[in-house]
Image 1: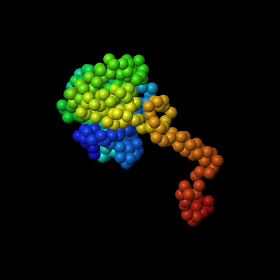
Image 2: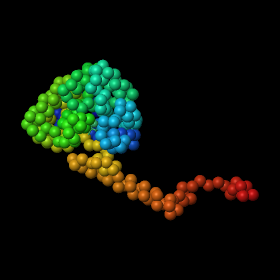
Image 3: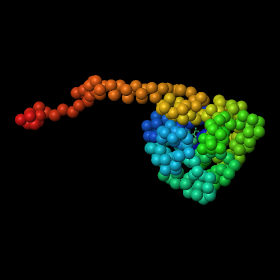
Image 4: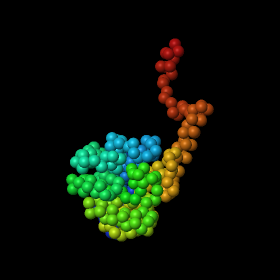
Length: 275
Ligand code: KIV
Ligand code: NA
């Protein structure tokens, strides 16, 4: 399994870090067998798996439930788990308690928290207690209502300078990496150069030290809205659709099941039934 120091080394050597989200056992197993560097159990699960229209309804229990399944499927991959909306803005002892529970119950390797500012205290508290923290700047879906929607962040010089400062403060607070979501590629380059810890981009251009995409977006698996920055690396949804239709049609027209799918009893047993 890779560690936070491997990720630092990969940044230093220019080897891209590949992160993918996963929310269940088969996805985690596929990701580990494909050799991704790290898996994120993102609270995006609220949208792509649980059918909510934002990440806000996702609970600590939801995260733990899914992270445990991912851990069982990817025992040798560095797993990061999102702390969900509302779980790390209160008293910092409470935040630490929640974080410790998430680490112990799931076997996660790190937790991810959105934002800098007041969240820096939590980043420092968790790191000091031995919980590696991945920061998350730029578009922060848990704050989308405050930001006025899912919009590109850091487009003005003022916003960009603030984001660079925030990133430096996350690093100083002990973050082991920072996710940069939906920011101009030039800003990603500036942040990446300003930090020793790796940047992992999503909708943030090519200059980040690594990339992350949502499983269901990159595989085109589901009926949810897919953001413009997500490339389609396969079309799993179409396969699922045609598989289910084929099954339905086969049952309706009697072509499934056949003897091949059936169990047989001996004729002498059968004859006793009919007498
Ligand atoms: O929840 C998630 O999937 C994320 C990624 C988009 C970085 O936070
Ligand atoms: Na998230």
